[in-house]
Length: 128
Image 1 (cartoon, rainbow, N blue to C red):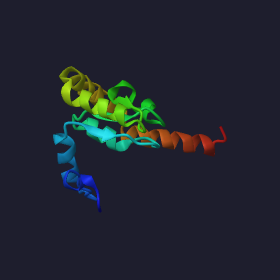
Image 2 (cartoon, rainbow, N blue to C red):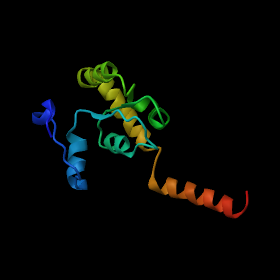
Image 3 (cartoon, rainbow, N blue to C red):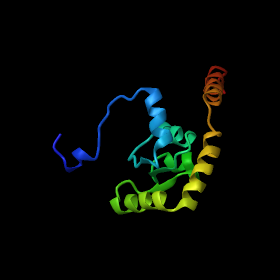
């Protein structure tokens, strides 16, 4: 790959879960300026590890993350850069995002998801 980022960015491919957990826990921020997401599990995983999140203000992400993440326009590099600078330099904001992130993660669980999916299937089977 020929790019100016070659010395600064590593493209790791698949990362085993134990290593991924270390990355989440040690990161100063998790950046997820996605153009389209159905839900956004990686930012929730980062929040669960106490990492402040910057993500997109479009698609489903504002609904999923509300005020628990710093929302930016994913096609505006200046907005993204401003957000990164805020997360890395504003300790009060970092603390708020970490606390809100932990609270946001508690809203979601695989058990709740399975129960809701089961309820939808049940309502379809019952003709409701």
